[in-house]
Image 1 (cartoon, rainbow, N blue to C red):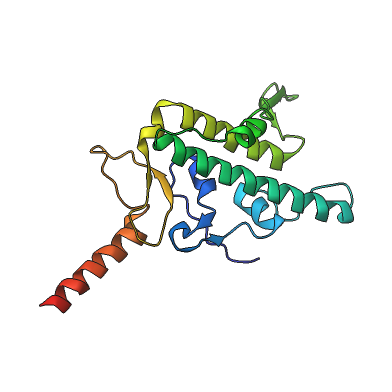
Image 2: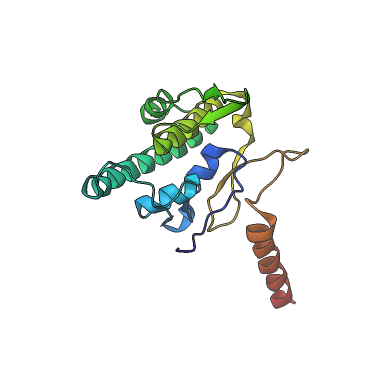
Length: 190
């Protein structure tokens, strides 16, 4: 299993999904390179088939990966546009959000609630992300969305701090690096 560079600092599923494309300010770095990366990010088994046969699964997985990336970039563009008071192109988001299905439940023989897995867990996961994006972009929490102040990062996050002045996607990562950089610059200037 490959080590992946996921971060979960967005505070919303839609923002965490946007953050699967890293370092946007310096040319970008794709984290969803293969269909298995998408499965791993969604928390699904990496050997989950995308289609009934292995040959179809490869094509279906690549197609779904490309559709997931399209959704991710549509969310990013719409979040940025809405934050700037501009119009966006929400069709990919709306298309995926329309595929959202209610959670399926039934009663077990002991009369407890049994949650049934969705027929297509990848589609269900992407539909949930799109639905979160609709609620974020069109809802009252949009004003919380920030872009990391690091000159190289570009991660999106929801600022839920009391003062509403959070600058960094993570103090442990970008905030600390900036503090170290400023400290070194002060020491050099002395």
